[in-house]
Length: 423
Image (cartoon, rainbow, N blue to C red; front, side, top):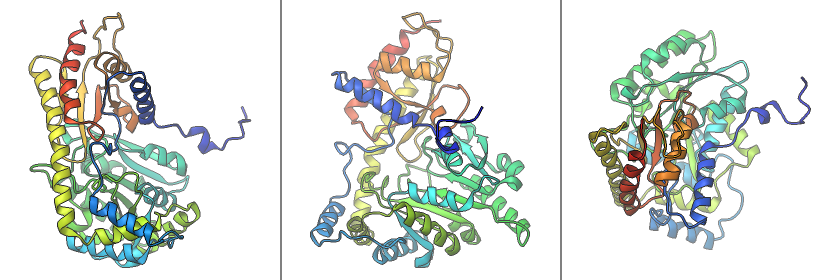
């Protein structure tokens, strides 16, 4: 039957954010005076995590200096030079200015990259769970191949899982530290994938379009303990011709609303992405760009800020992780992966088949989430919101909007709620 709604095919297929649906429900409960532990949003509450004070002063100073007109579509020269120097200092990577694109946060980089590399006859290869790759496939009308990842690999893809699909793919999407899992690639795993990409592009030379890689690294500064961030282009410099790195200040500086991000990649691809950014008007405000350009040179200030931020995030994640370990030790079907990076904890509430006090038998992730929201006042997001199709009890728990006292309060509420369930 003909579509008579007037909507485009993309609009018909595009769905709203499942994460925001949970967030809206929690806001309603809070408005009603209920206490909740909101572990659903990948954002930072300014009450718990503020942006660097020096950066705040530089932003205010930029507005006082009337830096309020349009910035160039590529981004200001000042910020591109600052990002260029920052990446040389931190990674030893050398990018030309026209290989750097500044945007309003990291999302426009991602959107522009997909818009410039995918058509309806192209294929996006990506792991699940992962953030919004399924929706970008809809926006570009591309074909998609989803790699179902495993908890034993930290929900990251490995070479053996990618290899059967590599010849069909036009783009491979990767992220580490990962949203939603809070896990990271091991060096062995990322090296295996990098070598596969190089081999595939060598095979394609002169015959077909290259295989491009989107590498989302917006959480790269937020790593814990023994875990290390590995940048593909650092490991294999020849990948620079095929990789676009996505980065910005949103997560590592708790500045999600300040909206300054960037991408680094091949000159010819960045130039095309600039046109998308320009027509969408998706540039970061000039004042913020000028401020960030100055801040990225302040290594001591950045180091002090990141040390404190990581400590505060890791403290919350470890407390949450310990709660899950204690529940598991008591025989409850709860499992968690040790915190590795970002602001997330992957937890499995394997409560399927359990009966609630109201007599409902829990049969899906959404039912488990609803039960924990009602009885433990806990807001969490199932992996289905990140493209994972299986009903396996795995959820993303985010600590960006809660204090330590909220997590301590949750401990008793969660245990009481689980103990109410029976076979």
